[in-house]
Image (cartoon, rainbow over all chains, first blue to last red; front, side, top):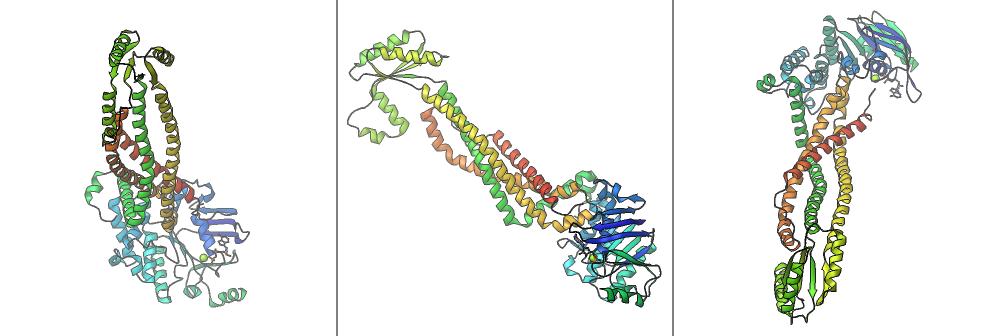
Length: 235
Length: 314
Ligand SMILES: Nc1ncnc2c1ncn2[C@@H]1O[C@H](COP(=O)(O)OP(=O)(O)O)[C@@H](O)[C@H]1O
Ligand SMILES: [Mg+2]
């Protein structure tokens, strides 16, 4: 589903964001991407959403080379990816309904169909009763759930999340991960960037670890406490 | 945007509906900051007002100039000692000459009376100790008549005994026509400069609007919004600013013209041209609205194109 082939990203200032990344994520997988702040997690996700272009190497999504996409095709490609941010990036002057409806409006979904699909997405994150509220009147966990509803409303086959639990306490974080698991169960491929080791410990997820732009570990069965030690020591 | 009556859903095509939605949103955005929006609209209105006024002024001047050009008259000022009977005899003689259509005799008394009527200075004139005006014969030549022929006619008239001097209006009429032509060209340049000013005002307003919606644009991009989709609300906004600015300008113009009509009517009697009516001609209103909206649209487009590259794009 997502494949990186010898991908290197060097920024204009000469700094390397990623170095020689090779990885493969299959359809229906739920993968965590971890590493310290500055390790290159966001850069990796940005290469998938085409906010950045690789300096070398190729990114393939859904058996298509992203290099082959024309400017006109990029918006259509992006509609198949749901994106979730640490700071949720909701539109503060729109209510919950309008925020969640945005991807549908963008993709030109017929007007009549929008309320039904927005309600389905809000139901999934348990916020049906908040549809007329402004984001500022919601708690942090609720705001993040609105962000998730917005990411899934278009039923994208791929969801990328960048530090989705970064601002939340452990209880709420677990809730969010539970939501991701539910999505994964209906076949969505998820790639979640997080430096929250506590969250991943002793769980059966596949975990990719980045350090200074390099992929230093790809563990299938989750990470153990000991694995985190060298990383902390290295920084 | 979530609750709209089903009428809209069923009778309008989705594409049209999308445009209606965006247009209504743009109206909402303009109304959201009423003070700032009004300032922009008034600025556009004032800027648009100047070329329109200039245009109307030039039209009036042109009609006056055309009238003057077709009304070449020779005024023969007679010597003061010439008795009135001799003047009337001269009139009959001239009347019979070829090339002359008509000769009018204006006695000094009559001349003074007309002057008083035209200028409204009768109070001053009554105080004059004696009449300073000579008796005058006004000759209307047969038209068309060329300039050399006119000058030749003037020479012949000057040679006549009893004629003190001859005034030919041709020079003044031509000078006036040339001035109108120059004013017309300057007007064109001024119009272009003012159109650029409107472009700048609208472009700047749209640039601010884009800046305010930067995060919305970024997030929409990431969700797969196309450039036309993102551009559309700003184009509507530019269109709306231009249209409202032009409408305000029209209102202001009507007030100004209404204020100018009485003195112009008075001038038109003296200089013999068509006085403007209180109404703005439809073609000028149309031109004003069309220019306003077009410039608004183009300004928004330019602002968007130049500003979009600043907002990250890959
Ligand atoms: N646009 C950019 N220009 C220059 N350097 C950048 C840019 N974006 C990220 N970087 C650098 O690339 C490295 C990886 O950043 P990032 O992918 O954001 O890390 P993470 O998300 O893991 O915290 C960091 O050192 C960061 O400073
Ligand atoms: Mg990051």
